[in-house]
Amino acid sequence: MASFDNLLYDLDAATGILTLTVNRPAKLNALNAATVGELHAAAAQALADPAVRAVLLTGSGEKAFVAGADIAELAALTSAQAAGAAARGQAAFALFESSPKPTLAAVNGFALGGGCELAMACHLRVASDNARFGMPEVSLGLLPGYGGTQRLPRLVGRGKALELLLTADQVKADEALRLGLVNHVVPQAELLGFCRQLLGKMLRQGPVALGLVVECVNAGYAPGQDGYAAEAAAFGRAFQTDDFREGTQAFVEKRPAVFKGK
Image (tube, rainbow, N blue to C red; front, top):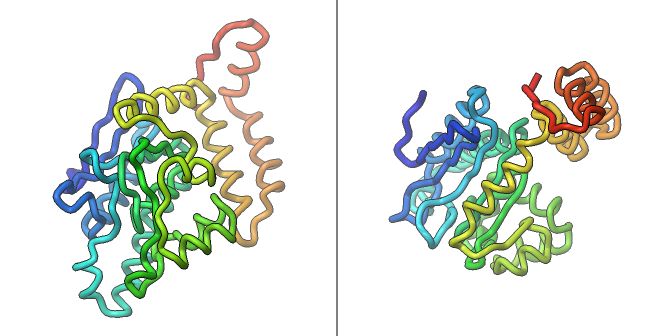
């Protein structure tokens, strides 16, 4: 198992929920290259570990989820280095988006730039009532590089996404909820407990089915893919699983299903 300098990796063996915490509080959890690399490694490790059933991603402290990228580090990059850094960030974040295990961002403060992009890569987002979201890259003469121009329009619509991207405006948690950028807003003291309850509700469902749902939703947004065809094929694959047989048998017998993820 890999060790991390900028992340806390805490697996609850009883629930299978991995709490992954970006831990650079002195920098408001800003993403430098090392942290992006660790996020990639941690996500890959979680996907490969059968004991991990879901990932809860958050930031340390009470001010920031991830306040953005490490600007001092970015400023020193050449054009070619910057393109490579963006590709590496996109690859890391894609692991959270494509994960067959539920991924949930517990946004406990500022989620700006790369932080907003990281939250958007997760399947769901729950914000504390003090959270703020924004894509301020244009104020630096830049643009998002970790998928923000693609994911934000899918979540809030093209027009509103362009407004946020082109003005660098920030939105508070209640506005993020109204826009559909987050799923829920809760008091900060209740954030992690609420998120664990929400993940627990998902984990009572069929694990194979959860992964197939994510696969099909993502297929609907992928260039060149037919989401309906992907859904039909996945529906057929589900019928081959032990989980399907257990779920239907439990329904007939009027008892809770005991899924094994097979």
